[in-house]
Each structure stands twice: as C-alpha cells, then as structure tokens.
Amino acid sequence: MAYGTGRDGSAARHRRRATVAAALGGCALVAASTTPAAAHGGGHGGHDRGIRYAALGDSYTSGPVIPTQVDADCARSDHNYPSLVAAARHVSAFKDVSCAGATTAEMWKAQGTNGPQLDAVRRDTDLVTVQIGGNDIGFGSIIGTCATLGATDLAGNPCQRYYNASGTDQLTVRIAQTAPKVDKVLRAVRARAPHARILVVGYPDLLPDDGSGCYPTVPFAAKDFPYLRDVGKRLNLMLRLVAAWNGAGYADTYGPTVGHDMCKAPADRWIEPLQPASPAAPAHPNAKGEAAMAGAVLARLDRRH
Image (cartoon, rainbow, N blue to C red):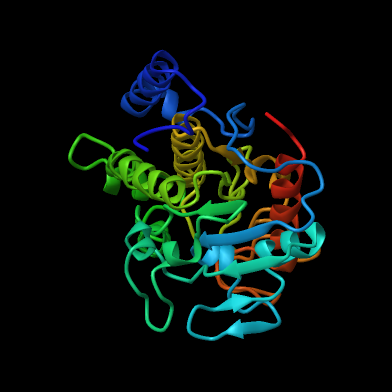
C-alpha cells in the first residue's frame, strides 16, 4: 500500500502528509520529540504472547560490545532492546536482523553476512520494530567532525558554523532527505506484513537536555552541545512524523533517557562517551540504555493508540 494501513481515509492521509511537509520544511523540526505520536499500527497489543516479532535497525538496536555478542559481523547483543522485548512478550518467533552501520539501504541489500533486513518481515509477522536513520544522516562522521573541531574554539560553536557554512544547516537538510527513505522502509514493511503492528523506535538522549557540556569527557565546544542536542531532536521528530504518516506507532526513547546522557557519571549514564567505561560502543547505549529503550518499546506496545 502507498500509505497507512487501510484504516484511514484519503483526507486523513493528506492531513498527515501536510503536517510532515510543514514540519520538515520549517522550525517545527527543532521541537522536542519526547511525546509519542498517537498513531498506531495494526496487529496486537496488550501482553503479546505467541506473536512473531522482527527487529530491524542499526547499532543502537544491535548493541555493540554489550555482553553477550551473538553476531560479531553485526555487533549484535543478546541483551539489546529487541531481545529484552522478545523475552518480556514470550514471542513464538523472533528474528533480530539489526546490524551496526546499517542505513535504510540495508533494508534491501546485504550487509556482509547479514542479508537484506526486510527479508525478516513475513506475511505472518505480527510485530516489527524499526530504528533507522542515524547512519543516513552520518551520525559517526558528525561525532568525529565535531570532536575534532571542538578543540579549535572551546567556548564557541565551531561545529555548528561548519555545518552552516553554506548558509543552510546541512544536518537539517540531511534529516529532511532521510525522511522519504524512512517512509519507503515503512511502506515496504507494511507491504510485506499487512497485519503487523509497526513501531518506529526513536534515538535516546545522547547529550544533556539542558544544553550544558562536559568537555573533555565529550570533546565538543560549549555552544555545540545544545546545537547537537537539537540535531538529535530533529531526527527524532522526523521519525515520529514519518511513523504517523504511515499509520505506525512511535516509541519515544529520548524522554526516558534524559538525565542519563554521555556527560553523566559512570553509575548514572546509559549512553557511553567516546571513551566508554562500561561495555558499549562509543556514543552508544550501554546495557542500561538498551534496557531503557526496551522499557519504552514495551510501554508503547501497552498503548492501543
């Protein structure tokens, strides 16, 4: 199907498209993404016993370095949030094909030994979670660029100036360009599993929500902390809007992880800094972070709308 699940009329679909277009084109992108959308997918709610669950995603889904790693090629942990969700719901069939480094393109093409992720979605699949888009906007290169530039102007915003050198914020452009790619993924999921409940999973809070910094633990310049925080919020808002556009649910992982970002003390943080103290990839969730994301997904599954 082109859009939605068949439950919404064309007028509703047009309203969703207009909302997404307006938000992606203007200042609404900088709004916080801590409130899940009311949209929902089809399929099963409540305590989903016996469901068939497929998990798609990138390294935030797969859980690199977190024990125990069960797929070295994709840096996939058996304590990532899909595994925790599957255990909590006592699923009858579980296929986790999340893979570190995945972009939306890897939904259709193999990534090393990992086949196209969409191959895990079948007509009898009941639940699909999708967490994708961070690598499409160049998450890793953004972190590296901003860390390198931070030392050149510790009190300023050299990273923000770099991405705005053309007069247009390039990260906002990248997020807008990623929206139709995520839309295409969700439409493909719906075509393959027309009765499944689909949840788009947002990204957690990486940096202090109040805009404060923590150089050198996280080596960004002071004014780049709020800039990069807002980039994360823009990405999440885009994912939430595209989920709503497609009649899918959105699991907010940003709100539940506020206060547990890279800048917090090791005992309190759920996202590791560039030099991790707990088993996790740099700038990625540790086991506590994956558990928090699992909690967000389970809470969203418990909502019917």
